[in-house]
Image (cartoon, rainbow, N blue to C red; front, top):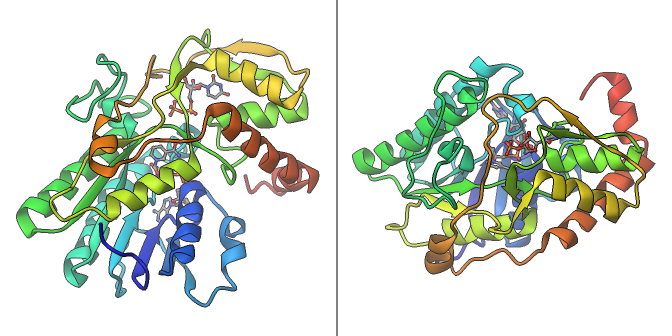
Length: 329
Ligand code: NAD
Ligand code: UDP
């Protein structure tokens, strides 16, 4: 494993939920961090506590345009990740994944940097193999509402592996499964943030479908540890590597746990299931364990408690309501 301290690291999408935690950890490990973001699905608030650090630089930039900087390593996280955000402007979502990947790979090639891609379990679509190993090629609808994200990420993976084979680039591709934690966007429509905000406000908890679909939820700190382990592997380790928590829950179980942990009186209501919503999802993390020595440590209950604490503080500051009124969410 290579030493990261002292490196100049670019985090594209660095002001987002995962990006802000990554920037924070990289600074703690002694790196200089260039955080690049167009704030499409985030705000400066996520990284404002880092701005006073002279080793941290924040740049507004859209990765669909070329970027000329000098760095040693690149983490490409730039892409809206929640269905609400990525379906808002689907053409832009595909451009961000595909042209963004080309620009990050082009930069990596020019400055000879190692480059990490935040890929996703969505490359498996609505999987017919369960749990999902990296060898599974997936079951993806190419023309549906989720396709801009799923196919964009699949094409980005193709580009990463072609740059690796054609240009000898050092690439690291992580397939991330549902991750949650503090600094999730309160209105991004993802299930964990939705349920917690609804429970804390005493509103109905919206379960799509019957709530029998499953997901496996990874706490953000565990995931970031996986990112750094993958980035530190020798050049012949490219991935794709699944990173996620293999403990699987139904959406209904998640709703009940959120109600219990918040002590909320919210009721469960059942709404229409969005099209192409995957019925089941659980990572096979055999590779991550064997190659990276990685496994998630945080149980769902413990991670939810920390995340609830974050949203409680946000609500107490009136932040969620202020932003709603200002129309910025
Ligand atoms: P997020 O929306 O909080 O973060 C994405 C960041 O990218 C935001 O800050 C956004 O403003 C920025 N961005 C979007 N388009 C951009 C563009 N054209 N140029 C520059 N910046 C742009 O989401 P997240 O959960 O932090 O996800 C980060 C990455 O991890 C994404 O690539 C996502 O696809 C991937 N991922 C996340 C999860 C998860 O569960 N959180 C699961 C699978 C994959
Ligand atoms: N979901 C739900 N209620 C919500 C938000 C999401 O039941 O308020 C469901 C959604 O239909 C999906 C699961 O929760 O089956 C996870 O949704 P999310 O958008 O968080 O992630 P993804 O579907 O991309 O895994």
